Length: 128
Image (cartoon, rainbow, N blue to C red; front, side, top):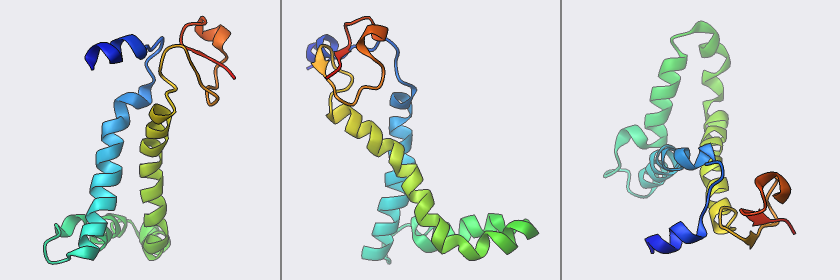
């Protein structure tokens, strides 16, 4: 398996988002999505800090330290928090899609590659 990875995946320039992949997974999916879903499914066993109410208490509590944030942001928590969750999960989803589409593999045609093959030296992927 390791030889397969070494032979088929080659990075001319290691994309920075690969390093953040686990961080995004933990902070986006595990903390927010799984915590909130667990709070909905089994509220008695969920860690209260990771439920919707727990995040609301924490975030709104910090916003309430400022009068401006208290007046402008605190009332909009129920609208802004789902957007925050989506923004935290989006990089993980995009990276996972990129890996599934094999955009990092050697000599594989990738329709989603933005940088032309000639710039990369012709060994990473070919454009379709």
